[in-house]
Structures are given as C-alpha cells and as structure tokens.
Amino acid sequence: MGEELRGRVALVTGASRGLGRDIARRFAAAGAAVALLDRKAHWAAELVEEIEQGGGRALALGCDVSDREGLHAAFAEAGAALGPLDVVVNNAMWTRYAPIPEIDQETVDKMLGVGVAAIVWGTQAAGAQMQGRGGAIVNIASVSAKLGLPNAMVYCGVKAAVEGMTRSSAIELAPQGIRVNAVAPSTVATEGVRAMLDDATFEARVASTPLGRLGETSDIAEAVLFLADGARSGFVTGQSLMVDGGISIALR
Image (cartoon, rainbow, N blue to C red; front, side, top):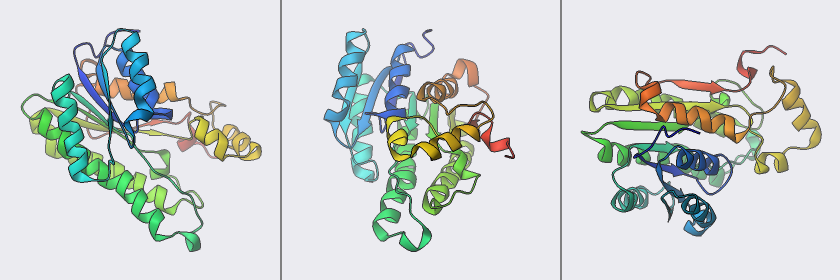
C-alpha cells in the first residue's frame, strides 16, 4: 500500500466497527494520523493499539455525534492532539428499519440526529479547522438515496439528505479549498448486515447485483481514500460516488 495520506491528519466518525473501522485502518495504512470517534472511546481502543503497533498515530475519542457541542469539542481535541484536520469522514449512522405504521419517535429522532444533524455539526467543525488550509470531507451516503426500499422510509430520506448536504456544502466551502464528496455504497457485507439478513434475503441481494457479490468494507474504504487524497481527486467536489457493483443501474 502507498502513502497517499502521509503527513495528513484524518478523523472518522463511527470508527470502532464495520465500515468506519476499515476506513480508519486504510487511512492509517496510507500514512495518516487518525482520530477515531465513536459513542464510547473504549470501543475503538483495540484499533488504536493496532495502528500504533504498526508505527502509526491514532487517538480514540468518545462522543455523541448528534450533540453539536460535544462533537465540536471532540474535533478540537483531535486537532490539538494530532494536528489540524486535513480529512474528515462523516460515517456514523444509527439505523432501524420499520414499516411506515410502526415508525416511532425514537427512530426518527435518532436517525435524523446521527444521520443528518451530525453531518451538519461535523462539516462545521471540519470547516473551522480546514479554513485557510483546505481539506477534504467525505460523507457516507447510500444507493438508498436514489432507490426506494420497503421498511426504509426514514433511512432512504436520511441518505438523500446526505447527498443534498454534500452538494450544498461543496459549493459553500469550495472558495476555502475544501472539497466535499460522498460515497454511496449498496449493501456491504459487514458483520451487522450478515446478522440482520436471513439467508434468502442475503442471497437475493447478491443475485440482484450485476457483479455477483455484495460489497466489502475494503471496496468502500478505497473509494473514500480516493476522495480524501487531493493528489488524485483534487478537482472532484460535490459528487456522490456509487460503489454498488452495478445494482443502481440494473433492471432485474
């Protein structure tokens, strides 16, 4: 692996498991110092140890990303400990699927808090540290922003909002040299997804994907790294990169 982010400082939310963990791990392999944000700092301690044993620098911070003041404080702490942030990945998400009649207040509040408000607060905090220096913000969207799914009204709405916020903030922050993009995966074969889907549903997802498999976290992490690396994507902003094995263009 190369050193695309050597000397850079990156922050990843929702970094203790699944996709966020592997994005942080890939950034560290690319030479970045990485701040790992999650609801509980000790959840990310094992990854910090792994990165440090490999010669990298990492920091775990506990934070409720939906809380503006708490998230701003965590960003400030990361910048003080590792250096001003160059890359921020807004990855954290809280998800609950339910048919429309069963959607409750907790579901809406938590999904909008973690999936929408946290990106607003994260973009604010990132912009403050990147002002005058430039940088890259990568938001995790989903093919669900464009494809309707049953029992996922709130989730699809949240991810559509992510793409809208990505475009708007890209325009506003461009004069400061800050690029804002999104990566939109299809179903990713994480431990959580595999546990959530029964065998028939899992196989149906695979069968509906033209490339014949679900995405791996490594597929998404490489796309995020591309958008974080200004040497390769320095003229790309306001875009949502579909990483979905072709499912969004398939008629099956």
